Length: 274
Image (cartoon, rainbow, N blue to C red; front, side, top):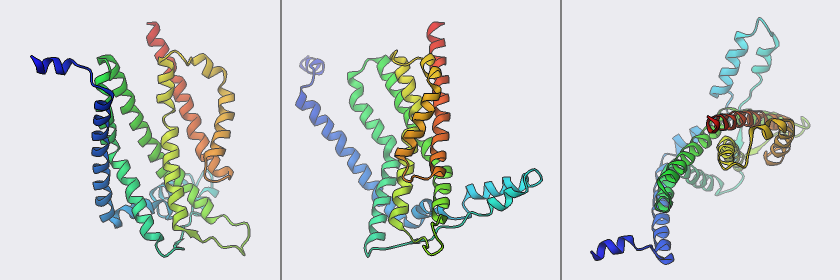
């Protein structure tokens, strides 16, 4: 009887804090363990990270194949598609390669453990939610994770290789050769992954705002042109470079996501009316 009364008694602030600490400890242990595991697979890790800088990357092969197929319609496509060059990286610090190895292992460990992290955090907040609220939060977390991974994949297969190819071969003068440091490549690689992962959360955020009654499809369609300008401005601010090429690679997918968000909000409004 006493156990039943204790089970129904709300936890104090310090008890919740102890629970949160235990959840954080679990997350740290898993991330640390995965970091060690990823660190041990150095060749596999950097074969993935460094692949987009090579002229033989799968995206470049696909572009060359499409250009060859369209040779009869646009003869100049093959020449332009054959212009992709591999980027040669250099190391400028004694401990830089080791530190990059550690940092890259940690980032990939975070990425691999993100489902577990989300599961643990959801387990911490779910007791405070009603059944319907748990279902909505679970859907939001799952869809948010999926969209983030889609954004990261778009960055890996589209944004990163073309950005690296363009910037790695761009020269203001033939007297100034490009010597790209490993640190610079890694920073750009993970920044673009994070950027596109966050940007791909736009449909999820739009659904959440529409569900809360704070966003209407009529508003989104009325200000579509304004949104396009804002997307261009934001893309210019958040991209690691200021060139038009990278700006286009970021802004075009974001505008496509905006159109998808408009469609999602319209569907939600239609369901609410029916």
